[in-house]
Length: 294
Image (cartoon, rainbow, N blue to C red):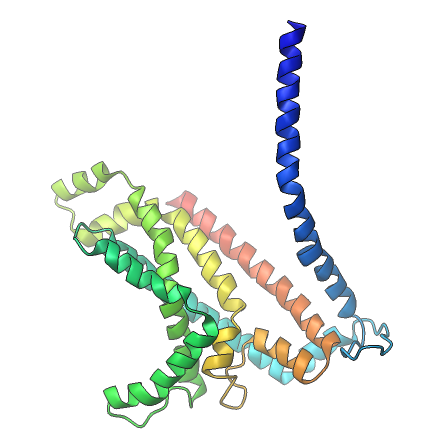
């Protein structure tokens, strides 16, 4: 009896050692790359750090945070980011869900279409932005026989940013919706079809409620990624015209590296992190509540 208990204990101990041997390097990397720089960044947000090596860094309290609320460009970038994020989140999820409905139908080219729709997600944001910049400036005017440049006006430039983000991320979100739709029991859909429900009625009454958890995940991913958009913003509009399309991530980089004001840039980053966290938590809470109601 004692011998068997000893074997069980040794087996548990081996599993315990194996578990921590794999987890420890990951935790160490996470603390070194994420946690420690995060708290160091919070410290620098209360200083006059300008990034010049050897220059003394002085503690200036909440001065950097006070400047944020009196900086017109920061306020403008924040509202542009909100506008872009809501637009991109809506477009990406509508297109992603529509594509998922399309490729889960039974036809021969469904798998090929899944691959084609997902491929834009494999292209880097910088390259994607430059390609679409050429499309918006050179190709679109020829197709629609117009002289209008979509990147010349702030309203259409923001729409252009959302279109490119949708083209890039729609296929990725499609994969999440495909997994959710394929998890729906086919008996339910077949029974509804026999009862005379059309495609829209089956989608509204069966598919929407049963893929609600996928909506929660997809909305969170698109919202958080839209708030952090930088690469496409740089290559597609570079903040033009007149910094009216400069999203908050680009504003932080400009403040830190172009104006050599790392302290204030870091304060913007910390405040932006808090705002994203609050908005994301509210979005997940409302989506989860909606799941229960469904």
